[in-house]
Length: 336
Image 1 (cartoon, helix red, strand yellow):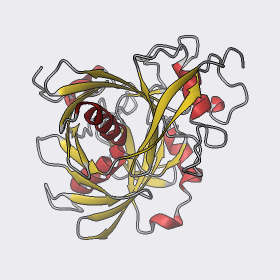
Image 2 (cartoon, rainbow, N blue to C red; image 1 turned 30 degrees about the vertical axis):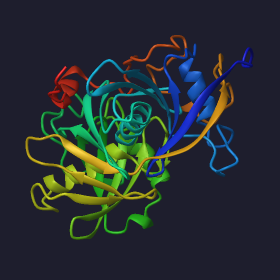
Image 3 (cartoon, one colour; image 1 turned 45 degrees about the vertical axis):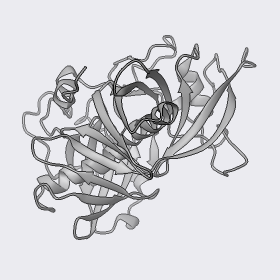
């Protein structure tokens, strides 16, 4: 690599183990995709003496809009493979916490490519509105020749239900979540022709009354993560659709990284609640060239070419951008 001597200040946060590098977007990084590929790498990425965990699940580029009431923060997420994500529940909660710290606010609106999302902060948690889960084929999206929802059908080695909770998920309800080697069985489903834009693969296990465990293999991370907010909401939405929980019953979802509370109510925006923690501040190099031999570089999705490194809205077939119909269906009625 060359010309990587310039440094930029960043902050590391996590929401129930889903960890992100935060960059104030007023500080220009010429190649955001390369920056994410290098510094999110789990073997060689960002590190600090307060933790033995390297890398991150993504980079959040945040723009604070102080002149609005409530305050607003624009969120752009670049994933470890360089692709963009339309929505990330834990990322949105982290973005709200970052903005609230700067303005001493308890209410924040997070602007994402999937729509504007209201966040409410307490002393210990951040709650974010997630939009209405969508099961229709065009909104997931499913293959164009599919005209019915995909509900509890076999794809690869799992029986899955497809839902969009800001990004698409294939959710399998299983009896023994620990018995499944998710990193092995998820890729064929994640790349299945049924899902032309790819899909996150999420497991849910009912462990008690309205209590679930969750594991998610995330598209763009290309691995299992410690927590996934859109995945937790997907578990709630699918549990409700399959009649596993009573209509409108709030549920508790436990990914490996902690505990999340999910509410999926008829004709209302789903909500996601959990803790957020600021881990550390540091400085990272402003990467100008993509890594040629990094672990993540081989997984870059179509539509995420480094030839347009500073674009935040690439929408090729492998990107996390949703079709217009999905964005419209998830858009909250936020007073502007």
